[in-house]
Structures are given as structure tokens and as C-alpha cells.
Image 1: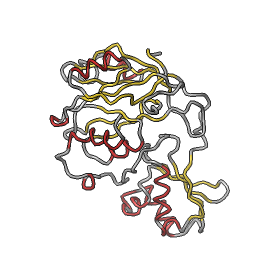
Image 2: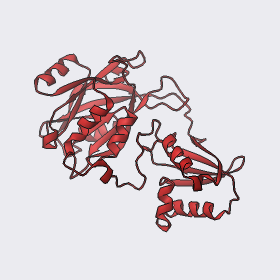
Image 3: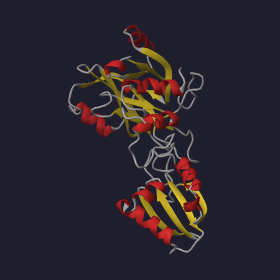
Image 4: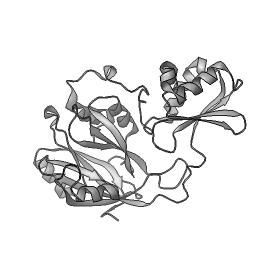
Length: 304
């Protein structure tokens, strides 16, 4: 299978005529170079004060998060947190909570590198919310493949609500089940239950710029790369999986989903297909699709 860099470049090829990556990062949050491996859990920074709580810079930081328009430059220096909480655990503590895809360890290092801001705190640590620890092991969920003949595109749906919506004619209509389905475990938790299924990040083509399609990756690095382009937009983490090792899946996720690509970047019509069926994999390659081997490992064939 190709390297992360070459796969990301392949996905990004649909919009090579657009401005360079450095010119197209519009988010004030400055996307991290990789994505958060545990969205919604590992998403906050704890900052223990080294100064009084009424320190002018501390007060300015609090005000900037509560009203970003009041001090946009300071808000961006803080990494554009989506929320702030003031705590008194042992010492006075500021807790900053960030958008799901932002890698919290990278955000923490950025904060430490800002010497003026960092000087106000005796410790700056990435962490989780105290109420976020799961009470039960992740459950199995479905993945179903759909096909739209008018688009000649494939799509993976993994939530009961979206599956019901597509079956009822959602998404513009024309989406039908192909018969391919799998079971996969929902996401793990840092230091939590085993096996620790990894995040699968979903992107869609940016309307008016990228292809009318979706792409899934288990690589935090590839996710970070795609977030820094204009042709693909991050959507969510719809399900979990495990990565293969040298093309082989582990016993805890023994079913390999092989990745296929339709080679239509020049037409801005990129689409990808995933299959565990060797016959389908060979058939698609015979139709001109490029195969990249096993990209995701899931629990079983057939949806729960």
C-alpha cells in the first residue's frame, strides 16, 4: 500500500489548480498537522495559574474566549478554543476546550511555545474531561455501502439514522445498498477499553471546489494534511477501525477493507470504494480503478 504522503497527495489531486496549501488555510484555529486521535474525549488543555486570577493578561484571555471578536489576535494565539472553564481543583485552573479534529497535544505544545502566555501558568497539560470516562466498552455498529448510479459513486454509511435517511431517499435520492456491510467497534478511549479502535476521519469535497464525494482515512497525519487543503472539508469521525500492519489485520479486527480509487481527479470527480470481497476488488481494478490494498480493519462481515 502507498505511504500516507502519497495517498494524501492522490486525494488532494482533484484540486491541484487551486492556490497552494499555505495560501488556503482560512480557519483562525490553524489546523494542526495531524488530527485528534480521540475526538470528544482528548480535547482540552488544563492550565494551572502561576499568577493571581486577576492578572491583566489572564483576564484578557478569559474575555477573548468568551467573546472572540473582542480580541481576535489573542483568541487566535490561544488556538481558538471553543469553550473555557474556570476551575479550582488544587490551584486556580483554566480549562480550554478545542474543536474535535484539533490534536490536543500539538495545541498544548503551541501554547507552551508562546512564552508570554505560558509565563502565566505553572503547568500546561493536555487532558480529558472528568465526566467523559465511558461506563461501558464500545459497542458494535454497522457500516453499509451505498451506490448512486447517476453519480457512479460509492459511499459508506455507519449510523442507523443516516442509513434510514438514505433508504428513504435522502441525499438527493438514488442511493441504494450494494449488499456490502460490516460490523465495527465504536471509538475507544485514551487508556480505556481494549481493543482500542482508532478514529476513522470522514471528509467531503468542499462544495464548489472539491469533488462531490467522500473520503475516509484512519491516519491522523493524512487527516491533518487534508484539513490544510481547500478541496476537502473535515466532517466527523463516524466510526472506528484498526490500521493494518504490512497489509495484515489484527485478530481484534480481522476483516480488511481494501481501498480503490477511480482515477478521476482531473475531472474533479474523485471517488473511493472499500471492499472486503476479493472478487469486487478485482472487478473494480478491471474497470480502471486503482487498488491500494487494505486500508481499514473491522470486526466482521455483515452489519449488526
